[in-house]
Length: 451
Image 1: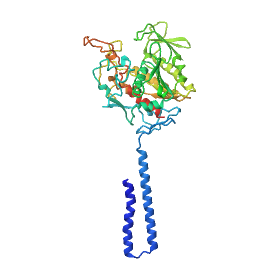
Image 2: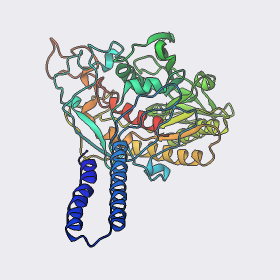
Image 3: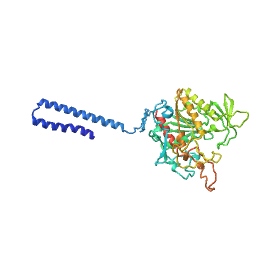
Image 4: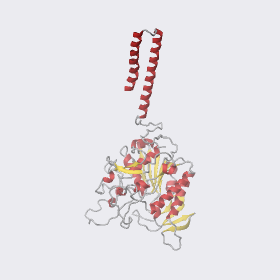
């Protein structure tokens, strides 16, 4: 308003002063005086026009969110990197600069920084946390691990907004496909969404590994499908991981548990993982080609790397040949943080804060798995047809959070009434809820909306 007042008042003062000089001189004719008045009025109008243009252009630039409606428009998060968000069915492209060659910000490169706001839910406000990840209820004594957030290096990552997410998913469906880390992730998502709407569980398999939920007010279906190899596998072990025989893994056949449901979903988060390290016999064309760690003199030993690569190639080949427009996010491997042993040999994780970048390196196993993932992903995206395929590269940011695991608090108060030096089984792979995995949802929402 100051600009408008200045623009309008300056010419008037100038005119009045000039008029007094003209009247005292009486050397200017009435016609000349009239022409000068017209010129000054014109200058005044031009200045006012510039002021209005500056005012309204500034207003547009600093305006905030406007809630989206059903015509497909979404509000644009206030990123340092500008993005246009839509609700269209068009397959979004990958905005990961490192792996996709995009000029947009790489949300997977950054650091964990202090966040005094704390978690977005607790074990009291979310009732879908599985006991093994319910670290608060199980008696974990420290809470500092709850006060960190992921901060990309070159841009601002907007916080996950459950209302915007549910509006985006209205009349749609999404599935998380993989092992128990995928189930861990979907439980985190459910907890955040429950602050807006609690979903109804409408399906579970016999072992409660695969589940389906329905958000009635948004007509949104969310599923988790347990398929640890993504390809066909006969698994002989109990729910505690105790093996009763080698896994029979068919590297060239999809697991039909998820493949037969592929056309039912608009969005998919899919991942392989640590199951490929297990003892297994490998099949191609229904014929044994070798095994990993089976110690059978009659079967050739094959490194797990071959099996992982072949299985991913089978999965990506399915995506690239599909005519169904499904937005697929492929999540990279999740490193564990066992120290001085593994899960079954006394390994533990008792750190209480994040690593800084450069303070820890990936283990050789995780490096091999991630290299295979990146190579096969790059090969697939060059021949993509129909499905939108993007990389969800959470490996490095997960590596920096050794403090986010249940550790011994995978069970209820593991040390109550017991000796303090008692060795209990630790979980240094899955994530506490709430915990660092919650920030995967912020990144996921950014990728889904930033099309």
